[in-house]
Amino acid sequence: MNPHREFLNREDCILLLVDIQKVMLDPCEGKDRLVKNAGGLIAAAELFKIPVIFSEHNSEKLGAFLPELTGKVSSPTILNKLEFSCFQNEGLARAMARTGRRTLLLAGLETHVCIFHTGADALRLGYTVHVAVDAVASRSGLNREVGLRRLEQAGAVISSTEMMVYELLERCGTEEFRAALPLLKIL
Image (tube, rainbow, N blue to C red; front, top):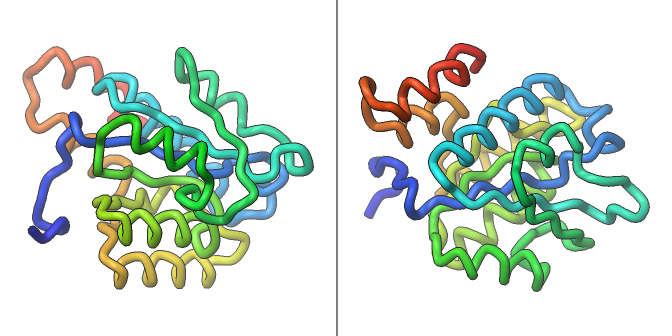
């Protein structure tokens, strides 16, 4: 199976939002775009009943995940880590495995560090990985691009927030489509 040819299946997806913490977000290029699109991914996940997991990197020193994003989920799963890869953290790896889902929708910080490590580990573990290119960032554009290129070479699908939402919708003319219209208009 070539994951680049397959459409997203909402029953198999997990949304993983990595380390969107103010102290790490502030120096990043495209931070406003990232927050808007991460919020869009959360709204879509809520609409399609896709589990959402948040990771915080060393929250004791770097602070909490952005509350304006975690507040969009009724009972958020927020787990702290020191590892760059979420899959190297036992709690996060267990939380993702417990869902029984094998397609990872990935967004957050920083593209060339925690997003790359997490995506590469997920691929090694047999997950299909879709990276929302408009919902990841790094402090430098070059590092963001290198991180995305490495992930794509490793087998990740490079996508966008809007593309993911349309794939999950599959069609117009449904109640879900009408519910998603306000979201689609801001993406």
